[in-house]
Amino acid sequence: MQTPKNKKLTYLLLCAVAAVWGIIIYKVLFNETEPDYEPGFKSAKVTQEPYDQYLVKNDTFKLALNYRDPFLGVVNSAPENIGAVTAVAANFNPPPPPPPPIDWSVIKYSGYIVNPTTKKLVAILVINGREQMTAEGQTFEGVKLLQNRKDSILVSWQGKKKYIRQ
Image 1 (spheres, rainbow, N blue to C red):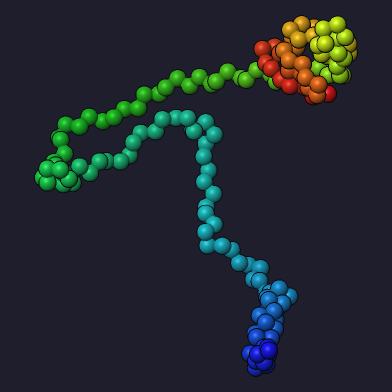
Image 2 (cartoon, rainbow, N blue to C red; image 1 turned 60 degrees about the horizontal axis):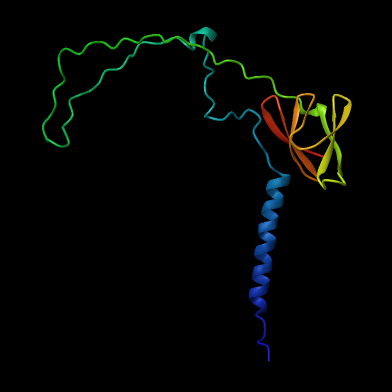
């Protein structure tokens, strides 16, 4: 047999849900924002000379060497004759530009046929509009066929390797 439900609790929870949804709808529909509001974290714009980025600037700090030595327990005194540190400008050699990317779109894999005598796959390649049947290890137009599979081929061109799908 089921226990009777508490109607007072149900009505109380129903009122609470209606109040929460009322607050949400009020915030969405009647949200008044001040148009002249500016956030407090907005920082001032820093201007910098464009060619001043790579100049070595002099240090403007001093070391406070009057702290207690954590191992000996005595206070260190700063040496009197500390020479100023001078910055040496290093030669800035930009890295060489990367080589241009290889255009693999000139190589197309049209399909394969099976050689009836050797039972090996022979790939049909189209390179720069020219078509050729090529077996593994053969080179055509500077492209070497390294591996021949039914759905793709592995070719080597200009020192790079890539799988080309049919």
